[in-house]
Length: 257
Image (tube, rainbow, N blue to C red):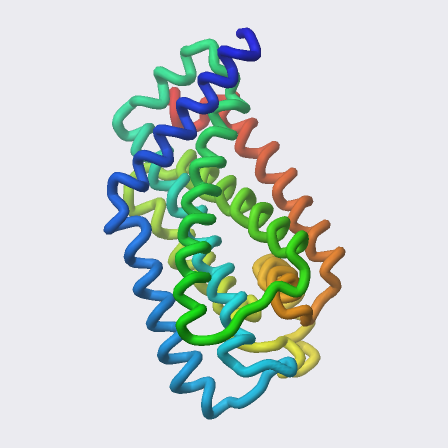
């Protein structure tokens, strides 16, 4: 398959993915915007005024980066898991698999679609946060890098979930019982410095902690962990998930059976 044909196939998958979530924007873009606005109003304004400062910033300023990251994580994951499982359910993905399109292009097409939705929602939530607090970027490069890498990581996670899912109910199990606890315990609403030493060490096992803190460093310049180490952790997870997802696709696991 020629390079131009590969590029056309890749862009076709990406355009289809973007059109899919834009066509149903009241279900894909509006709900997270409303949810995050409630977080800003309740946790930031009402509860935050009683908590005071955290990390040298107002509580609202401190939690905004974590809430933005939360929206990126959940929407990147949800887009790929729902889209690829729908393709399996409707038997559309078999048409891609029997075409000359390389499997890594198929995987990347779905991942870029998930990343795009995650970035769309993250941008919307960022704009909404400006109605509640002032924001500035301490390090633009780290901010952009962490946002992009996190969206890629959870898009890959959503793909793996969709491959294993056998029903529409299965694609909601991981977000409910894994993503939500990891996100809430990942330093979105607090600094791990407030925890006893045992729970601080336990928190270091949570991969979301590294993403939230690296992004918070890019925005506010403060972090509970080493940012360079956090980026290495994210890259390692991406490498593992990409390799695993591609292997599942090559084997046709849950698709050809």
